[in-house]
Length: 218
Image (cartoon, rainbow, N blue to C red):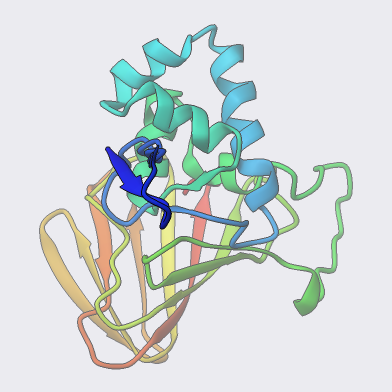
């Protein structure tokens, strides 16, 4: 295509290259958390440790090579669902990708001040997580979950161990083995995490909860 330049001549119009398509909700942009800078490199290191090429990981996740490459270079921030797809393909809990740089398991006593927690927020997810344990290298992990109205944690999953959820404010619905349990502030639920489970906020106000897993899993 050509356009007039105002003096009777024409010049070619440069077309912008189209960015690689991303799953709905995934965004380009700057880091959205203090772990955002390490997420892409951690995915790359884990992929290479499994000796997967970009194409092999793309095939296992049904994502494009260019899209995964942009995530690894921190040019795109994946949604929770996309991150879990990648983590599943790499046979690693998503939390270990998110919080991998959170610390070490050398100390047997660790005080974690409120302003020093590792936290992460995903684009268009209405969810934020804060790690209440120093890292995911202990026998147990605890996450502070803030879920805005309509937020949900993704498809049901299973893993080894046990989970406890304590609702601090608002209401949270937890599905365990096909049965929904509506929890209000002060309520808690325990379940074997080998049972399929998921959660969502079906109310019109934000909910806050602490999610404890042993062994650590996210």
